[in-house]
Image (cartoon, rainbow, N blue to C red; front, top):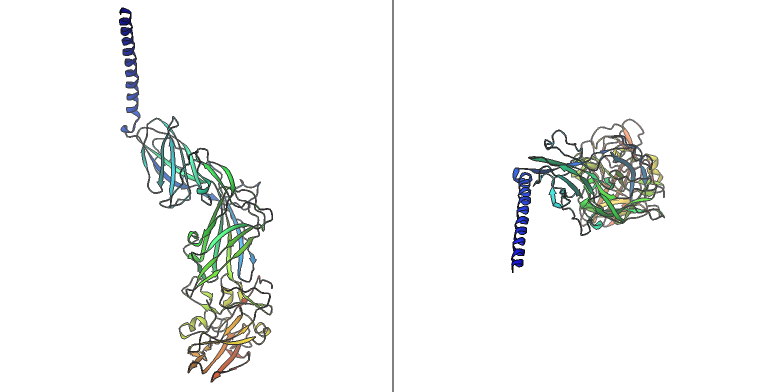
Length: 564
C-alpha cells in the first residue's frame, strides 16, 4: 500500500509539472497570437491592376521571339482570295508581349493602391471580371481560396510579420472562373479557348494596412480572326460561327490546351482542342465600325510555327444583316492565311478578313450584282444596293447619279464613285467599250408582281463555270428598268403598269464612264412596253445624254479580279 501510495504521489507531481509547463507554453503562444492576429488591425487589401501591356515585333520567328521592339507593327500585305461567293482580302499582323515577370512582388507597409512602388499595367481589365486568388500562410496552409471581381477590392485579415504566398488566375470573363480540382489542377476542359491569366508572388505583412496589386500575365498565345463585312454592306449577326482549321497535310494542332497547376504556373496533359466562336461571343473591334467588324479570339498553348497556307479561317455559317433589314446567310466559307505565323505566349496574332461581295462573271467581265447607291447616314456612304430592282421617288437622290459625280446630285466632276466603294479601289465604273462587249441580253423578265411598281429588266447569264450561291438574290447580271432623273429633279420613264399589268411601259438608263464631249456622257438605254399583256422589248443602245441627268450606275471589279 505504501508503494502504491508513493507511486500515486509521484504521478501527481509529474502531472502538475506537465500542466504548468503547458500553461507557460500556451500563455506565450497566446501572447504572440494576440500581437499578430487581425485584432491589431493588420489587413491585406487585394487590387487587380490589369494585364501586363504588350509591345509589337516586326517579324516573328523561332530565333527572334525575344527580340522585341515596342510599338513596331509588321507591314500588312493583303492577298485577294476569291471563291465566287464571298471574296476576301486576307492579311496577318503579329505582336508580342514584352518579356517580363509573371508576378508582382510587394512587401512593404507603405505601398498604397496606385501609389509609389506599384508597377503600372498598361492594359486594364474590364469591370466585374472574375479571378480566383489562393493565399498560403508561412506554414503552407491554404487560408484563402476566393473568387474576386475586378473593381471590388477584397479585404482580408492577416498576421503581421508573416510571409504569405499568393497565386491568382483568371479566364478574363465576367461569367466566372474555374476552381482547382481534387488533384490541385484546373481542368483543361474549363480552359479550352480561354484567355488564361496568371500571377503569383509573396508578400510580407507589417502592422496595419497592406496592399497587394495583382498584374496578370497571359499564359496563352492569342490568334484573332477579325471579320470585316463592310465590303458586303451589312453587319455581322449572332448566327455566325468562326473557327480555325489546319489546311496542311501534316495535321498540325493549331489549338492546344492542358491542365493548369496554379502553384507552378505550368500546364500538363497538353492535347489538341477545337473551338468555334459564335457571332454573339465575337467582340466589336471599335465603336465606329460597330458590328460590321467583329473579332473571334482563339487561345492556344501551341508555339510551333504554322506554315504559310496551312491555317484556314472558317465561317460556318456567316450571317449578315443587310441595309433593308433582310438576313443573308452563307453556309460555309473558308479562307487560307498565306503567311506563316509563329504563335508566342502572351502575343497577339491577327488574321484580318475584309470580306467583299463577290461579282458576277459575264463574258470576261466581273460585274457588281446590284446598283451603286449613296447613303450619307452610313459610315461607308458609297454602297451596293441590297437587292436588284428599280428606283422609286423616295430613293431617287440615292440611286440616280449625275455623270461621274462625287455624290448622286453633285455636279459632274470626273469622279469615279465606284472606286470609293469599300474597300476603296476594288471597283470601278465601266466604260462604253465594256458595256458593248457583253452584247444584247440573254433574256428579259417582269419581277415583283403585275401591279403598279412592278420591276422589269434584262439579264445576262453568268459564265457557266462560275459558282452560284443561293444567299444572293440573283446569280445573273440583272439590269433594272428604273427610268432616270431629269435636270429638274423629277423621275421620268420609271416603269408603270395599270389594269393588273395589262398596260405597262418603262425605260432603262445607266451611265458609262465614257464622255464624247464636255456636256454629254455615253449612256446605256433600252425601253419596254406592254399592251394587253403582250411585251415589246427594245434593244440595248448607247446614246449620249446630258451629264446633269441622273442615271443608275453598275460597277465592275477594278483590280485583283478573280478568274473563272
